[in-house]
Image 1 (tube, rainbow, N blue to C red):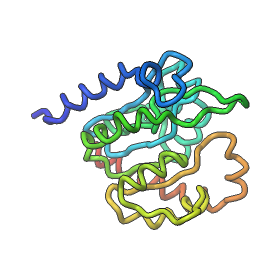
Image 2 (tube, rainbow, N blue to C red):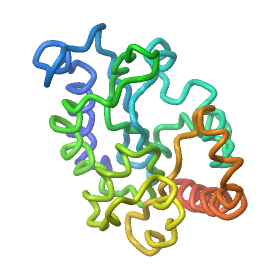
Image 3 (cartoon, one colour):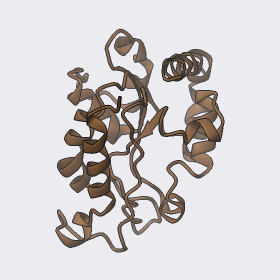
Length: 215
């Protein structure tokens, strides 16, 4: 018997795919290029990767984390590309669905706020089966922590938040904060060897558990 929520989610994803808010009705400067929303969610995926926003390479391919950051993230998760892109098992929903453009220094701009305001509450309401969330980067961490009722420590930075990953282990859905897997964070990884020694094994165990339940 088909899940009654499937048509609703399919309709919402179709609306998201056609979204042009950041170009036609922006909050601030309009998106400087044609929008290409990148989001992959199903009613069966129990694992969610909540990221920041697509980069330029993902904007071109339409595949989230289709770059060296994705290779590092898949290594942390202990899975291959085929598993990573199996939407029936893994959902991927960044805070901004479209590539936001570059700043004058050539770095990615922050995620556009139009996506969060228009779509995120609806999207996650239609995917209540998600039980584990890998939250990548500060924007996603701030929003999902608040959404799930987790208190932030005043002045807490990314390192301190990731260090207290155990504080979120008993919650459902379970939230696992991660640094961005960008090559720019290679220095951070060297300075924080506890991450790969302590947290990466926990990430792999949580991924195996979520994928095992999803069949």
